[in-house]
Image 1 (tube, helix red, strand yellow):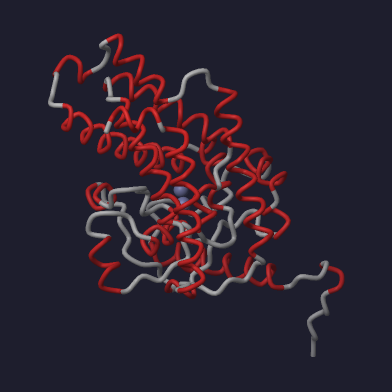
Image 2 (cartoon, protein in one colour; image 1 turned 90 degrees about the horizontal axis):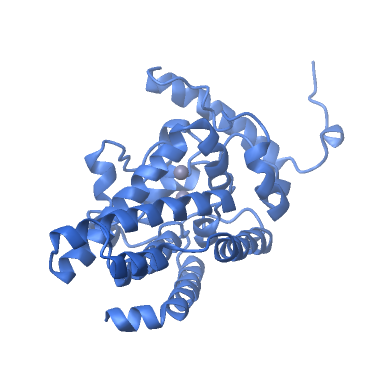
Length: 314
Ligand SMILES: [Zn+2]
Ligand SMILES: [Zn+2]
């Protein structure tokens, strides 16, 4: 398996990306979870342009990616697994689980540190939640993630085929967990015992800060349960909840050029971060709801501000 994975890495990654993208897009048409409000063409063209740009920057910007680092660690016999010398299958399984925990920890860090949140909020500023939201990440976040993953791969001495496997699974799961799909209730409940489901990750894209700061996992649902960040459902229900952040709610912000500059515009608090920790949940919910209602009204009123009819005063 290992030789096959390594020899066919680019085609396997690209192939699985398109197969899962098309499969989830079809599932979104057959069994949608939420009503679509924004034309698909606008979001899809820009979200997919961003992933194409990310891929190009990654290939050109970093001399060695995680898989290359794993091949080097293998030849140099560097890293933990070369000291412990576990069976190959165990090293592969451990690599996938440890990298998944790393991605979870990194995600929490990107929410907690204001300068990192600026970069990560591009992912959260999508006004709808569908399969293309899963690839909507700022190039700076993609580069930082790859550097961190590469360092972890060398420290572990991870088997190269495990790194390829993890990248393929992570990418496929990102598309699956962001899809606007309604799964049969039983299937959903069983799945989320082990892995992150679309209904679970959608909570993370809520405009309410306390919901944004929950369900950080990408693959295994274990980490959120273990570290107390699991939230089973959004307060407003999946159909009623508002997706996005308080900042960047105009449709123009969905364009590629705007996404690229979002980290450098507006306050770092652009998700209602002003809601202090320790404040009662109820008050935080009330304030986030009011902000979300205002934002949603603004999104519906399409005309320029001057063109809106003035409110009648008695
Ligand atoms: Zn996030
Ligand atoms: Zn997400």
